[in-house]
Structures are given as C-alpha cells and as structure tokens.
Amino acid sequence: MKQTKFAALAALLTALLLSACGKQKQTPQNVAAQNDAAAAQDAALRNVRLVLDWTPNTNHTGIYAALELGYFAEAGFNLSILQPPEDGALIITAAGGAEYCVDFQETMGPAIARKEAPLPVTAVAAVINHNTSGIMSLASSGIKSPRHLAGKRFASWETPLVTEIIRNVVETDGGNFSAVKMIPNYATDAISALQTDIDAIWIYYAWDGVKAELEGIPINYIDFGALNPVFDFYTPVIAANSNYLNTKPEEARQFMAALSKGYEYAIKNPKEAAAILLKHAPELDAKLVHQSQIYLTPRYTADAPRWGEIDTKRWRAFYGWMYEKGLLEQDVRDKGFTNEFLP
Image 1 (tube, rainbow, N blue to C red):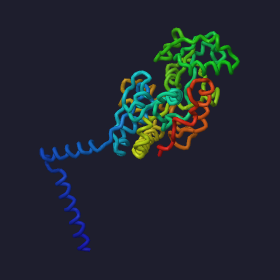
Image 2 (image 1 turned 90 degrees about the vertical axis):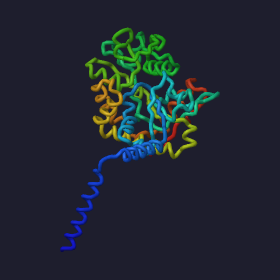
Image 3 (image 1 turned 60 degrees about the vertical axis):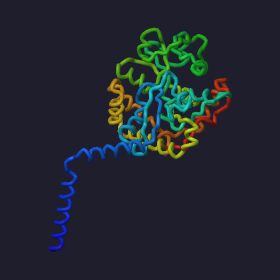
C-alpha cells in the first residue's frame, strides 16, 4: 500500500514539474524556434489552387468547410481559392494556372470535344447529384409549362446549348419555339430581371428560387431534369487539370478525400457550414445562405452511393444528346469524367 501511495505521489510530482516547465516564461529564443517550426510546417504543405465558377455561394460550401476545419492542411495541402474571370475557370485550369476548378458538364463538353486542341480537363466529382436548374417566371406570367414560353421573352445566354434545350422542351411540350422571344440577357439578379423586361429566365433553384421564396414572390418553376432525364446533367462539377491527375494521382486522391470531408460536413451540419461560408464571404445575405444550405443538404448526394459520384449512364446520355444535336465536334460521351479519385 505504501509503495502504491509513493508511486502515486511520484507521478503527481512529475506531472507538476512538467506543468511548470510548460508554463515557463517565453524567451526570444523559444519564440523564434516556434516560428521556425511553424514556417517549416507551412513550407511542407503542397500548394494547390482551385478556381471558382462564380462568386462564393452554397455550391462551394464544402470547399470552404474543408479549408476552415483544417481538412486540407491535415492532408498536407495549402489551398488557394481563386476568383475567375468571366467563364474562365476551365481555361485557367486547362492551361495549368490551377489544379482544380468548379465548372459544369454542359460547358465542359464543347471544350473536351474540340478536334483541335481539346482542353485537358476532367470532372472528378459532382457537386450536386441532380440538376437543380430550370426556368423561373413570375406566377402572374402564366408560364406553367414550356409551351407557354411561346410569345414570351426568355432571357438567354446566347449559347447554342441554351437555344437547343429551350427548343427541345418547348416543342416536346407541343409549343411553337419560333414564337419564343430569345432575349440576350446576362442578368446577375434573376428576380430583378423578371420584374423589368423579361418573362422567364434560367436559374439555379438553390439560389434564385430560394431567394424568391424568402422574398415571398410567387413564381412558376419548370425543372429541366423532371422534363427529360437527358437534361438531368451534372451542374456544377469539380474539374481538374488532366495532366495533373496523370502525373500526381496519389496527391489528387488525398486532395479529393479532404474535399469530400468538407462536403460531408456541410451535409451533416448545414447551419455550421453556412456560418463558415459567411465567414469567408461576409458580403452574402446570411438568411439566403442559411436557407439555400438547407435546400442543398439532401441534394449534394441524394441517391448517389457517396458524395461526388458521377453516374456513367447520365453523363453519357447528355453528351450523346449534345453530339446528336451538333453541339459537340466529336462524340465524347465516354470521356471527360472519372470517379477514380473519390475516397
């Protein structure tokens, strides 16, 4: 018994001594050593760049969550999040100005299908498992179905793809596409556009649709994916420079594992994840961010077996349709994506 008490006392004294040592006064030498250690740790991190497709929003929450919670640092990465020039994220990534970017299956298609100088980019994850974009109009417009667009003003980005999709949904619904007034419009505020000189506009519901809900504005919404399974394409995606993937496959796997943890955190903790996004983008409307995060929570993964997984049949179906409509120079339905780097 005495030996046990002696051992316990010795352990206690040792702990007190260690504690006292830990609380010793910091000297310039100690501080310098700590700074050197921190600098060495930072130097050991691998620099990786990711270009956003647009200003920060809830499509990007998982990226910021992984950054804020240290998932990238734990995996050995120093991530720089870059803002893109207009429509420039994919080009920057293809040129080696970044390892990753946020882009879209619909814009990647023409880029990788070029007969001359196709862009070396590959989608490595789906940010949202199903297409959440569609046509929004004010309820007062009476546009409840695609055929009702005839005689109405549709805000178009003036791309062959937009024109062909609108033609398809209108004519499939029995409407007259030639009567649709395709108005060139690059409005950044869909609701304001609808309240001025536009009757209908292509939106992403997680942002503009949710915003209309919050503002109490009655709208009609036509879901592209619900109209035609072919239009349930992947928008947006995380894309990577293909040369980078080929030369540093293990690094890419480690990066995607950290990124996946960020999105999984956002799925399980929408309130906290929204707060992280707002910390990095305080200019955003906090109420909109929180409500948009709630909307996207079940949609990031939906019915996929894991976050980021791209369904081969759906990917092929959309690129097959694009090729048949003359929107791609080559048939690339089996190209441009991989699930290889997901954890």
